[in-house]
Each structure stands twice: as C-alpha cells, then as structure tokens.
Amino acid sequence: MDNLGWGLQMTVLGMGLVFGLLAALWGVLTLVLRLDRPPPAPAGRADPPPASALDPELVAAIAVAVLTHKMIRRRQAAPAMRSYWPGSLLYASRWVATGRGRQNRSWQRRGR
Image (cartoon, rainbow, N blue to C red; front, side, top):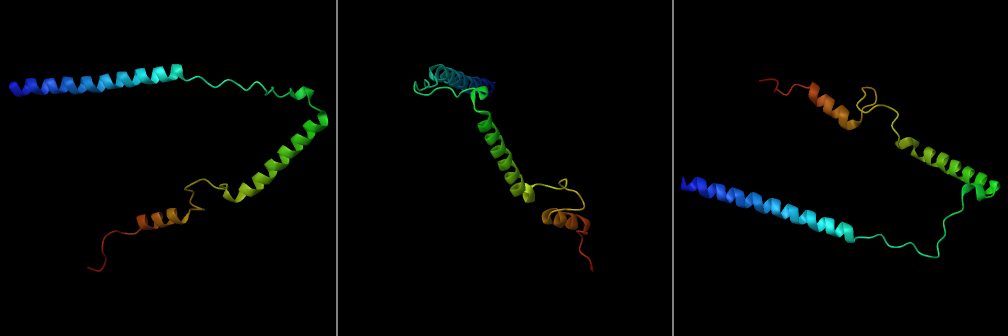
C-alpha cells in the first residue's frame, strides 16, 4: 500500500508539473501576442492609384506582358508536368516498374 501511495503522489506531481508548464507557456505566448504590434506604415508611401486612374494603353501593355510571361512559363514547365495519372500501368516510372517486377517474382528459392 505504501508503494501505491508513492506512485499516486509521483503521478499527481508529474501531471501537475506538465499542465502547470503548459499553462505558463500559454500565458507567455498570450503576453507576447499582445505586446507584438505591427510596425507603423512609413509616412512617405502612398497607396497605388486605382486601375481606373491608369492610362488604358498602360493597362493593355501590362496585360500583354502578363499573358506573354504566363505562356513562356507554361512552355518551360510542360516537360515537368504529368501527362498521365501516377501509378498508371502504361507509363510507370522505373521505381514503380521495379517494384512491380519484384512483387511478381516468387520469393522462394528455386532448384532445391
């Protein structure tokens, strides 16, 4: 019975210590969150003008540049993009093909 009492005391002490430290950590994080303020915006920077205030030719030039960039990036990424579902039977990678080959072979020794 003496060992049971000591075990219960150690359990309560250990769990109390863990939960106490978790509560202290929660308090510290809450305090840091309240003290952490975003820096004020610089006074010299102004908001960009709305799109309606821009010259229509400039907006068209930006749109052409964005679309051209998108087409170039798509052509560059085309070899890296998948043209088949992963694990399909027709176009399996070397790793998948090797694994399938090992699964289909018998694991028992032959000839004995």
